[in-house]
Image 1 (cartoon, rainbow, N blue to C red):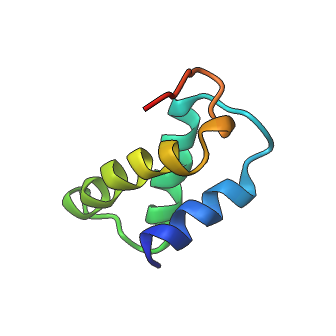
Image 2: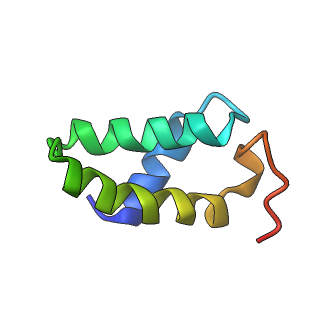
Length: 68
């Protein structure tokens, strides 16, 4: 799954506004469900995906402001 697909998948599953920590947990879980359970692989995908999520969907995150 590409990073864009990963972000869109997590966004579509959110119940509404959530904390940034919840977004990171959901991204990590989506990566894990792909079968990527190696820590190096997980963290290599997690950091850029979580940063991109803030740019793509800043209104989903309740503990902002995210004026980046």
